[in-house]
Image (cartoon, rainbow, N blue to C red; front, side, top):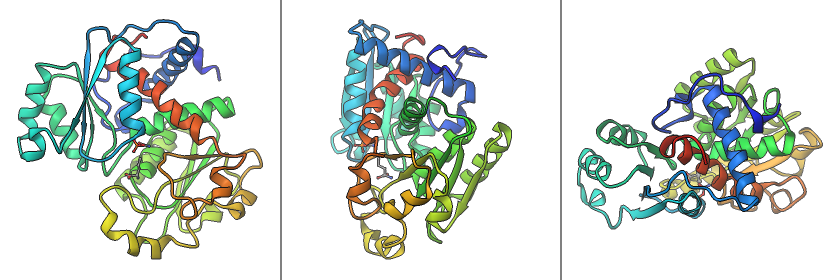
Length: 323
Ligand code: CP
Ligand code: NVA
């Protein structure tokens, strides 16, 4: 598959990126293709101007390194600018309604990226505002991360359809977005999580239906070695996500000793498998230092691709679809 020269089947019509479930396979591939072009242009020193005169508001109710830096740098590289708005400082954090915030920001900026807790807050912003809303992570989903992950998988494997991705650990926002994004592109997904921490059954059902349509498989099991058998891509994430700090001890008891990407997992996966992690990672917990710092790991390519993938998202939603 030549993703760089992907020919769109339909015009790109999405206004927002709330979840990858809202985007078609064709729209996801258009975005990845544009990300590859934008990356190549940036590396070649070619000027990018599609956000000229435009501003992205970035609302953060949770911590961030990658999302904050990649959106701000990305907006600047596209000729625009980005505003960091912590909910600790803005009136939204003191109870100003989301609907008013959406309408005020719609009069001043050209798009909103938000990292928050409830997915319904994004839907509310999208409903009351008139500008694109981009999901920078909620408790339910992390679509921008998965676009960067798909780009990284393509760069390392030269294809997407027909691969197998295994996710070991908490059935969290990453597990949900990976299931949805991969199942739309014909990538098999196998998730291994302990009972009580399996992915949300509604999102699993969406992913299973996507997979049926796109000729792939989505399975959820309890045994990491079963999930990782013959996997091309190994993925894990922290046992306790942001906002779950109070459950850390209980979660550790459920995950420790079993839900880890380690040498035993590498033995059952494909010899040329790659290891991905959205980061931040906890070495010795969900992944051993030997794996995350070893030859299969491509975590820093993956982190870099946040920049290129999100520039494509901004170009499509705010910049007319070209760099
Ligand atoms: N992966 C990711 O979203 O990282 P940050 O929390 O640093 O933004
Ligand atoms: N599941 C993690 C992802 C961080 C990028 C969290 O929500 O904290």
